[in-house]
Length: 105
Image 1 (cartoon, rainbow, N blue to C red):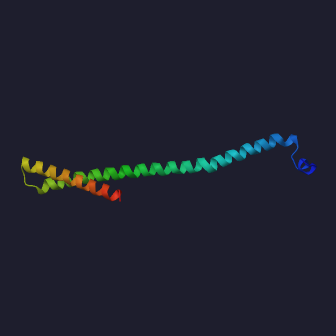
Image 2: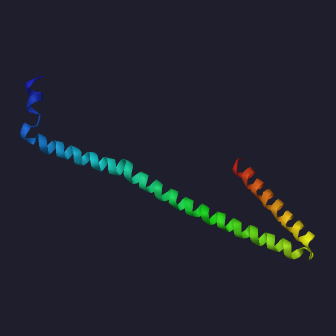
Image 3: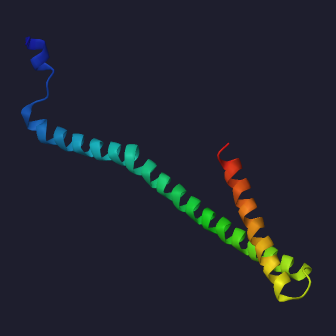
């Protein structure tokens, strides 16, 4: 090493300060570079889970309402009630198949 490169180095007495500054900078980088994006991703995942739960509940309530409507328009009788339940089940299977078909396209 030449004398000019040794002269530009910090004195040994400043070494603890430089190490402390390096640790502080590393912590700040870790917090900004990894922790904040992970926190935002977790928040997005939480909102997505809540939204999917709301959609599932809405679909369930609509299915029950559709089944009740089908049972209301059917004539009275045990056989017609069974046909109504079967029609509601087939309608739900068809709706689920349509949603799955559109989701995979």
